[in-house]
Image (cartoon, rainbow, N blue to C red; front, side):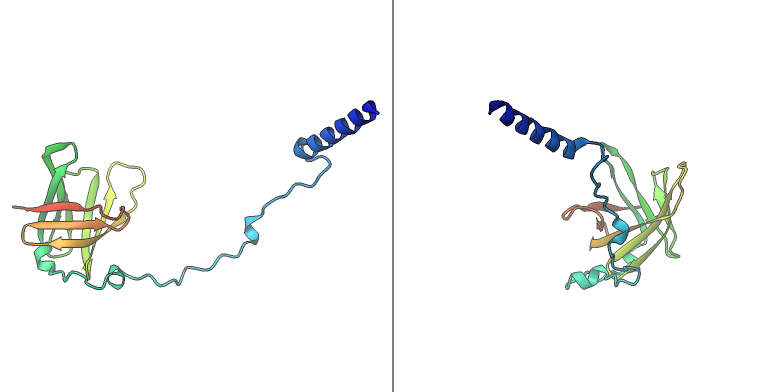
Length: 159
């Protein structure tokens, strides 16, 4: 009787192992085909700007943005970097030799800065999108939309 029990147990173990790792010779494999999933078309999705998300947006006087805005280089507090915004929508980098600013625009409380990387194989134009959190005659505080909540970049006006 013990030998029959051992044979049944051995058969059960072998059958279980065959189902787990037989290379798919005798059992069907489950193949997940993601092309069968339906995905909503987002090509005509409505993109709301930052003013619809925040009721009390900052009124931006674009004339106050004209000029040079600098901040210390992280780790090199005596070195400064930033950008210059000109009246004609042209933007220039300050002490950032690989990041080249080209132009700028303000839409409500959002500052858009077109730029590209110089000296890199992919020189595609990128648009930095930042929310203007504070603007005075001497300081500018920006929140990059892709940054973590609470992160800000602080600039001061340079002469």
